[in-house]
Image (cartoon, rainbow, N blue to C red; front, side, top):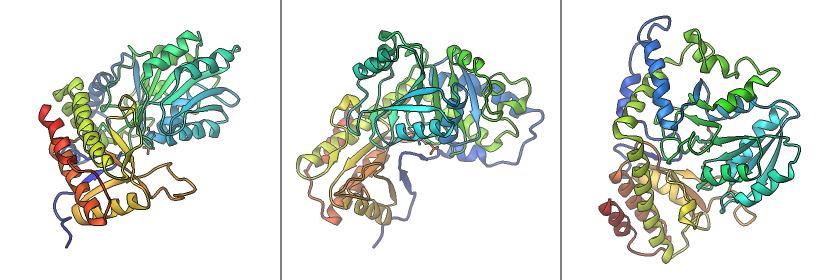
Length: 398
Ligand SMILES: *Cc1c(COP(=O)(O)O)cnc(C)c1O
């Protein structure tokens, strides 16, 4: 018998759960885009987005998923033959580097593997060796969504300053924005890229680039930028259509308005803290399971763990089997293991991920963990006891 009927829970690392308030805000007739409320609404969203990224820098909207914003960010600061340095801590660093290569940019990579964070000393050495200052930017993922590694921007910025290197610091905040604590200006990030469907709780299809004054200077020095990706009209629009390089993505914007209201009503500090506490509850359960079986958190050092997504290994093809069981029997959809393939496990079926980003509260996390317990029982995964009470204890402490 399946017990999956009822409200489903999409616990993958994006798209995330859409709040009813967002869905309801989108459910309306098409608005006039030439005058009226939508224009003031969009102008009003700029400062609210800046307060999510904690920046006074400008913001460019793109009607694109995160991949589009990756390409747009690069297209504004580098061109064919220019170099960037990519710090890779999982699948997503490789992805951004591939976007650079597609633009003719030379993307050198430092690969830190899939279980360790960025080593600032290695970055500093690489930047010191670049005496010609050929790197126009250092790219990294704030959260790598495949490995669930969290990279603190501060030591990265410190390494760049120690090497006295003028490159821009560019952060992929697609999985982390409105989930992880982030202060773009105070932490010295020049370009931050994000998308609508993760911490921002809006359907996929909108993305954002936050641009520091130094990044604006880098754009001004470019001989040319493809017209559609150029952020200049978007960050300083004289006409409304320039925000979007064409027709506004009307209904995404209504959804985003509702989502920004939710975030700021709760308060960014509280949003971040909620993600921390819910993540700690998940880790507590996973540690208890791990103590008596094969389940492993991909990131052992707690300080390097994302509070928005958790990558887990459970051996054999049990990752896939667990995902199938919980979606078929309990209405919970978990994320696939990404970038975890190995000769022993060519399809990465021993891995899965829990997305815990965005519109998420304690009962959803406890329900998801209880469902995982049932799934492991049903498919016969050996595990330690006490996982649910360990998670409940974290929630009870608050
Ligand atoms: C989701 C994600 C992307 C890709 O975003 P799309 O919207 O799927 O193109 C890039 N980087 C990170 C860190 C992500 O989590």
